[in-house]
Image 1 (spheres, rainbow, N blue to C red):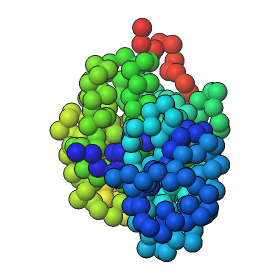
Image 2: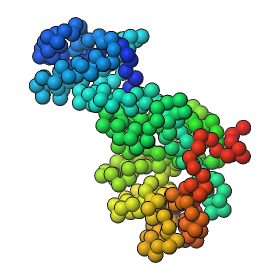
Image 3: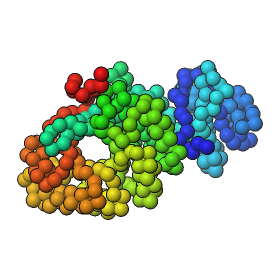
Image 4: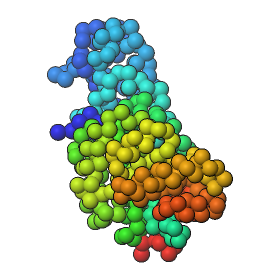
Length: 344
């Protein structure tokens, strides 16, 4: 069984066939009136197209359909090389958005991204881990990661992108890092419907590359948007059952994240950079940092300070018991780690 979130998406070819279901009489008639040759089948109907712009024109011609029909209508596009293969069905509204934002959608579907690594250090400034961050491939189109994920969310591709980004991070870590170096990998809880099923691809990738699950820390982002804490707890439990640690990002950005931290009890607590910035000079920030650190230590978590750019910030965080630090002071995200940490 595969849930909708785990569906496979393929790039939309320059020419191919667009499949539609359900094939109502109004749909078939409207397509025919606009000059399209409609092929009816047991699943619905289909129309061949010669250039991608034909798909945009077709979406426009379908606008006169009654709202109920448009809401029920789904599309699947197959290329000329394998027209018999169905990958996933996309609701009309999402498909229209995919066409509208196709430059960004193409980056997602063609997986034109890679994983950069930013070092994480301990209190002696030794690199003990890396966080993996999505970046454009050298030969591909430029993008900002948040824009790519926002486009993915709008177009129904956020689960596809999240899974592909996790895979990229795992594969990059296998290429460059020796066993024993922690790898922090982001994930979106909203992309995971059934944790065991949706994360099976991630676990299989770790197994396929003969990596140690204990080296991985999966880090929940969009913490402030979490409404279903029980769902996230179940995701954490599945990760941990496979020997993988979990982390919460951006803790301290809002009061809700402190409540969630206490309920979820992650293995790592990453403190938001807004509390780190010039913390050595701000008593209010210092008070909050001490509180979060003590709370995290009470349930056995390690604490990581994000966004450290000044040595004074690092010294203060170290003094109050924060074990790990990350920021430009120690290194920017890069394609590969320092030579002495590269896997031979």
